[in-house]
Length: 159
Ligand SMILES: [Zn+2]
Ligand SMILES: [Zn+2]
Image 1 (cartoon, rainbow, N blue to C red):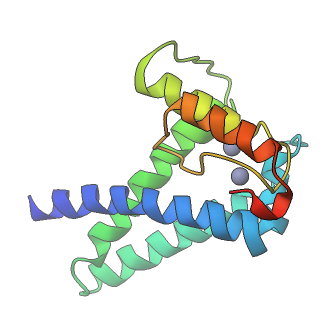
Image 2 (image 1 turned 90 degrees about the vertical axis):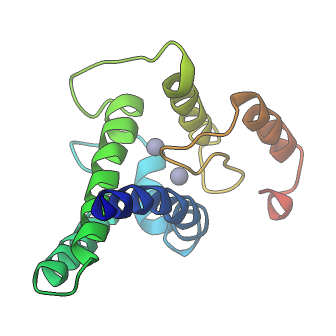
């Protein structure tokens, strides 16, 4: 029971970590890797996939440490792995269609998540983007307002 709680809490925490990392690292000094994700993809992979590999390596290290005795790190690693799977299904699969399965959500949470991430890619660059979450999405109307505001501002004042 405690282990299940750790896994769930880790998934929630990972979304928070991902929003911050996406906003301040990937759209900041880590843009060199992330840029590939904001450009048309050539082939199967993009440099941005290295971020997923870094998180996967971290999860493997935690699981190894936990099973070697450092309880409960393996459950944090399991939560990170679950988050990675959800990210892959929602972001890579549903939004970017990196697999042959096509699913376009027509209502509810998944539709909002889909539209919000489409709006993240609407700007076409590093500055002035909105919606940095992968599993959480702010209301689409708010994002559209934010995009309109950003367009009318100089880049230094955009958020
Ligand atoms: Zn981005
Ligand atoms: Zn994306």
